[in-house]
Picture 1 (spheres, protein in one colour):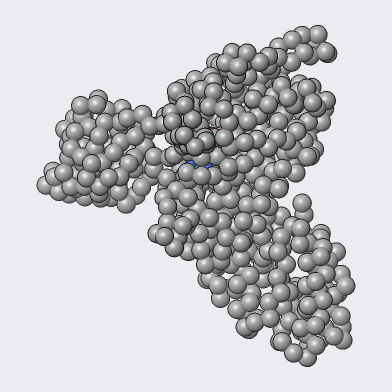
Picture 2: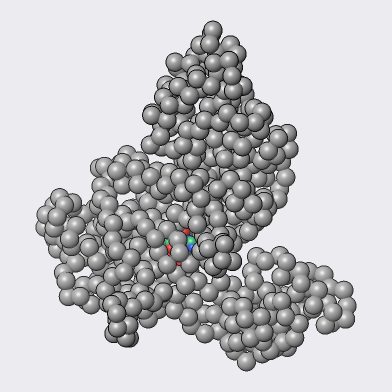
Length: 519
Ligand code: ATP
């Protein structure tokens, strides 16, 4: 973990967010109008970073069939893509259970007008007290916890230590105790409401009349687009179980408490795959996907202590999961979850829950006739569901590397495959034939690598400042043309991570960079 290499504390989210703004990775949506809570725009570098991550997933998972791995059946893995609508017939969301069940319990504060996910609120009390006054705070929010400790101390009229208090989840309390709680940012008890179910789907209306009959929903996940097209894909492609269908795109959830930068947004992108297999083979395919997805996130640069694979306990399993069915999360240790982890991708054995639900609701047959087995069945399904936006955030957190010895004091250590700027070309000074050589090299590199990311030409300011800009942008290699270049036909390449400099032939730069970028 680069952020704990030197110190064992996480990077500051404020610093990361400031860099994201300064260098054009992520901006607050509608910023000039004061923003809009839970929505984020990607700037030029962020847009390209996100595209590179999505392309890596598309190429590795879909086109290369799990990076060319052999499946547990000893054969190559077949996955086909789909691109489905954000708005579908509302019956899709009734059948999938989202209309009836996609609810988060929420608690409102009547005084501050803040809204909280009830399952994210914790209650601080004097150790041993199971009722009476308590102080609510958001889990993992150190500031709110510190404030709650202070208020409890004042209330009890004594200095309190951690050993004097107990912390319990708010949802575990009897409802009548909610009135005794002091909400975050409030001084007196009684401002919090009891938890109420809140449907997370955004509603809209189709057509001009906008009556309740015209209600439609913005999709809260991309996965259902796959299930409802299962039959179409079987009928139009020469696919046979086991095979997968993948879908990537924007999803919307009216999150009760959007927070932690882009981690919990109301509009975000997902990269989901449904892998269909024979019911008797679901365990081995589940294990295959779980391990592959962990390895994949490692392969694009999330390494070490910050990444982990966590199998769910039996009591965490979703309502559709059969006993013994696997569910695991690939988790990243974000600075705001530190020392804990936050979900990046869920891998779940969903049995035949979704296909069967749609079969029952739509009466379309979701069966597959397996010629090899001479058997007709509704396939089981393994779902690796990843967040593209959360992936970008993890990549940004992982890349952020403080370095007091550089002019920029920080550099972004992106995997070269993801880096939005692949290379930069600098003439040392803007005269003596150097700009012309730089322009020619820039044009060549742009021609060759422009499909994968930016190649920048920068002629302004002293070389140190230009390097500093590129360090913050996470550009892996900078090529400098100097006074010797016209005679020795060589340039100096500077490595972002090691600051090492080496001299390479002007004509060899393209080949050299090709070898370094990968992907
Ligand atoms: P959480 O428990 O964090 O709300 P979830 O378990 O509801 O997430 P899934 O429904 O499994 O999430 O969605 C798959 C992936 O989509 C998640 O692993 C995450 O990366 C991403 N995702 C879900 N909700 C959001 C959100 N509000 N903002 C950004 N990404 C999200």
